[in-house]
Length: 265
Image (tube, rainbow, N blue to C red; front, top):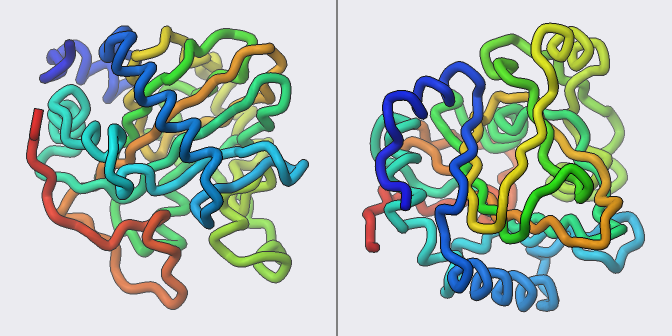
């Protein structure tokens, strides 16, 4: 079980921008959450997004706002205590999602930095935020694991804005498809990866991945016959609540409840 991260683990996170902690949740817990994820995938809702085929679910957002296992999980000490350590104080969940990455059909996530979206679209001022990802399935070399460039959270990257996308679809929808609104340029990826080898975030179901909002990351398509589902909870400092923006994204993408979370289990 994970409650507090050790000094060594915190140092590793600070240096690399991510940390994998294996086997945090048990088999029964993960199975129950997996079943809940499948129910959410099958529920017609604007929270769902789809792959290019228009049928395969890509992700469901705002899962922490729906009563059930995921809502309970965000106040579990195994996630909340380390999130507080990394952020440096009280937190709330700014965003949550369950990426599906379906077998033989889960599409890519281009290279990007999450903070770019939260800063430009939600008015979040500082990267006082951490992602905590739960592997609902084993992440292997073959099923489109998350790829990260170690140390890239400490280097200024160059994001490429794709003009015209917002005219094609609602602004917030442009942030969720495989063709992202903000991506890191090929030149920046080449420069960053020349000094730090790209790493795959691998682990068994029930493992946790903590990663910095500024780290350059993405994932390839799932070429295996096994799903690679992952639930991601974005914990933001209560002292870093986003400011007002002209066109706020839906609550399931940028939560309006900024109450500090308390450990419940």
